[in-house]
Structures are given as structure tokens and as C-alpha cells.
Amino acid sequence: MRIKKYFLPLLILLAGNGLLAQQPTPLKIAVFAPIYLDTVFNGSNYTLGNNNLPRTVLPGLDFYNGIQLAIDSLNAEGQSLTVLFYDSKSNTQSVKQLLSTEALQDVSMIIASFNNRNDIKPLADFALNKQIPLISMTYPNDGGVKANPYFALVNPTLTTHVEGIFKYLQKNYPTEPILYLKRQGGLEDMIEGLFKDLNKKTPGLPLKIKTVAATDSTNIASFNSVLDSTKINIIFCGSLNENFGMNLVKTTAANKSYKSILIGMPTWDAIKDLGKGTEIIYSTPYNYNRIDKLAQYINQSYRSKVAGRPSDMVFKGFEAMFHFGKLLIKHQNNIASQLSDNSFKLFNEFDFVPVKTNGEPIPAYLENKRIYFVKKTDGVIKSIQ
Image (cartoon, rainbow, N blue to C red; front, side):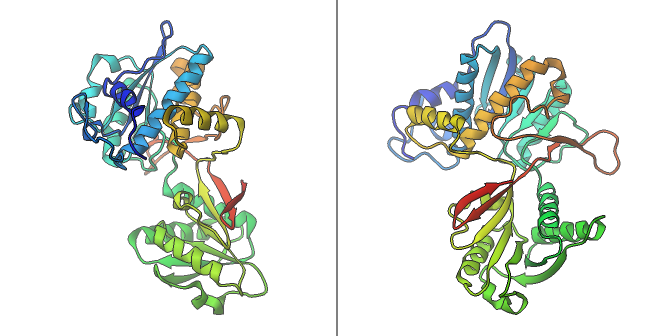
């Protein structure tokens, strides 16, 4: 994406840290996202000329664009909210400094797009102190937060995904042999441990798992001796590593004598065109139907403002502001206990469950346990469950 003149007022508006939906006596929402404005501006002077925007800027900028589109929609409905937007990567004011400003002392909700676990705790501590929800919309990490029932994790943790994948396999392939491809690594060891523990403790029928070691360059054909040419083979990729996953899908598609279904991790959602030549299934917390009326509205509105195609971060920003903004208006002081209310569902349902650790009575945080499963055949989405 190349910088054009229509970006300039948008970024200057962000630099002012203020974005208001003008309504009488409104509830207030603060939004934090990593924009890195100081890498783009020197004071009020734009510094990049006609160069491409840095990759670090684009996710936060798209999240902001989604927030802005949602504010337009809320204003069109006559909703009453004040929204303050802050660049969480500002070099002039740290998040802790921003949280001490007068403007943030009466907020009723915080929405955040994080890209680093170290950024989470200052906002989570503030939310706990004010007893207001902090909606972490994008980052699947609890940031070490403990005893904080006001911190709501929308993007589920890896543990929740592994649990969901296990249940999916148990429901759909309860008696089929499953080939578990294991890559070397600490994270992979954790995934395998979770998976085996679930299989050991399940009250239902345990899965028939055969674990085999593989590397980033392993050809699935090397395991033909444990595959069945007379039926569809179920293969589970026990790694988040994209190169490992891409190689597994590629070599499986090339192994024409053996039909297989590949079950993958949530990182597969970000790999473009993954699955050509075979069928893949993976978990995701976000189900953005790009062809329904709302998606078309977002596409057209974004294109008219930015002359481009909206990324998923635009959709996440829109959904965060519209869905949780309307929940705040509906429930106001009781919002923290009503985050699973799906009255204003746009694309996704949310099911926030208190996560307790080490038997502690107070939840460490709230986590959305609702995940979807995407099925792709030859690179085309065929169904979402």
C-alpha cells in the first residue's frame, strides 16, 4: 500500500488522540491500538513522502479504520457514545502516562488491539481498578494477568484451540486412525502434551492417535506405510509453524495415491491460498463472511475512504466498536457481566467464560471459548462450522 493524500488527515486526527461521536451525555469508550505514528510523522510533518507505509503501521491503522466505520454506523442509528482513540506506541506519551490523564478517568469500557504481551498489564490493571471491562480484541495471550474478571480475551488462547480441535476430531472422526505430525520444539511439546492429556482424561471414546516426528521439509509420502490408500486419511498438524504447515499441505496435495484431510492450527487462517489440491480444516475465533450485506457495506465504505480492500483488522475494529459499544449502551454499569450477550451479533458469537488457575476463587480473566472451524477444498472455503 502506498501513502496517498487521503491518508494525511486520518493520521493527523489520530495524532490528536481524539475521536468523538457527538451525542448528549454519552458513555465513554477508550480505544488503544499500535499505530506507531512517530515513525510516520515528525510533529505535524509527514515524513515518508511517496514511500510505502511500514508494515508495523498497517494492522493498527486498519483497526482504527474499522473503529471509525463503526462510529459512522452508530451515529447513523442515533446512538450516544464518546470514543477516544489512542496510539499505544506513541513515543511522546506512554500508556501509563495516558492512563493518568483526566479524559480517561470516567471511561466505561476499553477496547484494545495488542501486538505485544507486555502492553497488556497496564491497561488490565487500570480496568480492574476502575471495574470496567477491557476488551482485548486481537491478541491471543493473557499477558500474565491474574485475578482480573474485567479483562476479556476475545481471541482465545492456544489451549482453548487445542481443546476445540480435540472435541472436533472426537465428534467427527471418533473411530478413525489419526496421524499426528509432530515437529520438534517447545511449543510443539506443549501442544502434544495438551492433546495427549485430553485424550487420556476424556470421558468419551479416546482418539486413535499415531504420533510421528517430522521436520519442515518432510514429505508426507515418507509416511505412506502408515497411510491407507483405500480411505480418506486424517492428519493433524501439531505445530503453529507456518513453514511446517505449508510444507505438510503441499506434499499431501502432491501425494495423489492417498486421499487425506488435514487438520491444522489457527495460524492457517493467515496463510493465503493454503489448501490448494487438498482439503484442510482449521480453527479460528473469527468468522467474517465477506459476501453478506454488512461485509459489502464495510468493503464499499473502506474502499471509498482508502481505495483498498479491507483486511480482517478492519472487520475486527468494526465488530469491536459496534457490538461491544451497543452492549455498553444496553447494560451500562452491568456490562462486565453481560459480555456474552449476543443481541448485537454481527459476524461472530462470543462466549466469555471465567478462567480460574490453581484453584483461586477469583477468575484470572474472561476468555471467549467460541471458536469456528473452516473447511477449505482446493483453497476455497466450502463450509464453516
